[in-house]
Length: 226
Image 1 (tube, one colour):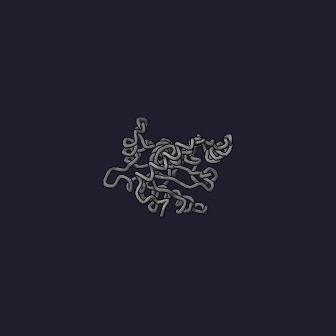
Image 2 (spheres, rainbow, N blue to C red; image 1 turned 60 degrees about the horizontal axis):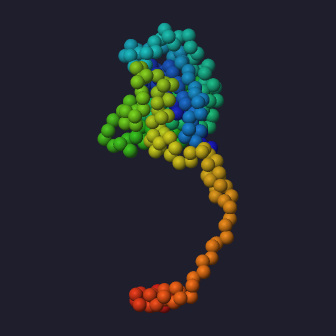
Image 3 (tube, rainbow, N blue to C red; image 1 turned 30 degrees about the vertical axis):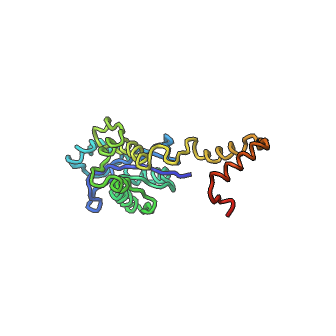
């Protein structure tokens, strides 16, 4: 079983090392590349101001966020949801750096980079020289993103999950339409087919002789005489 968490974050800015903080995490669970319906969503009190230019991007003001829990209060819940799943993010270095910085500040183990899949890198490899942001990829794959008036972590994670599956080749990249046991079922069905004895056809003696004469006349240096 392959379990993956497609996630996105919103922040107060772009530089965690200069004091910017997480304000939202949204995530979608995939099992064997199929959405399970399980999601994670949390607004976070950054304990600082949110610049106006950033509010214009995600719509989350300091006044709105001040009554939500701080990261240290939700960290265990987030880590429990993620567990040992692979992590999928768009421009993953941004999201991973912010989450790991927050984890480090409260003495929690950071999430390993080798378990992370960056959909931006995949998209750039597939569509070199074209825009590969989330909106552009939604348009390319015909994914409805009309509800995306603001950047929002959960909505963006849901859209990214659809994009990720398209980048893999579609919603059934392995063609195992019946789920993880499809191959086993197919083999079972094949082995359960009714056995039928081979049919034997009698050839009349004169027809056999006519066929032999035809071969001798029309086939020069046949392989069976070598």
